[in-house]
Image (cartoon, rainbow, N blue to C red; front, side, top):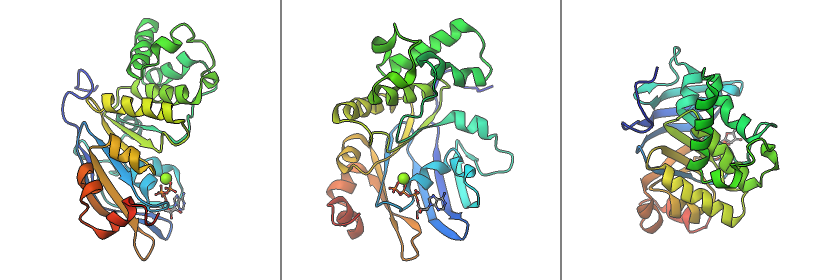
Length: 265
Ligand SMILES: Nc1ncnc2c1ncn2[C@@H]1O[C@H](COP(=O)(O)OP(=O)(O)OP(=O)(O)O)[C@@H](O)[C@H]1O
Ligand SMILES: [Mg+2]
């Protein structure tokens, strides 16, 4: 069992040390070293194809699902190297949840989407499951909108509501880290702002890593920013990693400046 009594009680660190990732013979990441600050929002930015999603997926080993992937170096989650042979990947994905670009709900009810994770992890008590449903919906400010419609098909919600439900579903298993891969890119501006507000609230408890192409959003929501770029071999390298204010107002690297001012990418 988890020795924590509630999420985020201790600082839960994640990071990489000299990580390279290969898809077959192609090196998609080169020697990336990154120490993520707990309970904060880190934005991963950079041009298309520079390896942002690949980097994000390292932390819950989602790249494992792709044939021919090889990882060198260390990915650390709470002090443990997650690519060690004895890593429990199911337990890892419980601690490091993920929200995708488009809502990926199951074709079942709002409630069913929220109880599937806790059930998978062995919880059977319906009253406790109902508590989790309410808590997670409150956390994403969706409770008032759906509390009388928990049996409604999840996919009949608006896309913005669906994305908040996806975040709620991630929260049902009490993760430590939430990975978000362009999770606002399919949303209208108002839904985007709601998710950004939510990210702010969640960052008090959880560590959030978010990939975005929207520079204004990165500047608005994140505490730290990591700028990746492809080198001459098209491998993604970390160019600059600093507090977001510095990256956007006083970047140290000319390539960062060129990117954030929109001169390429
Ligand atoms: N499953 C895969 N098999 C082979 N190559 C892949 C695979 N997924 C990604 N790549 C390659 O790895 C590189 C990095 O891809 P990745 O998807 O991580 O980039 P990204 O920065 O997230 O791009 P985007 O901003 O377009 O989402 C690209 O050159 C891509 O073509
Ligand atoms: Mg991507």
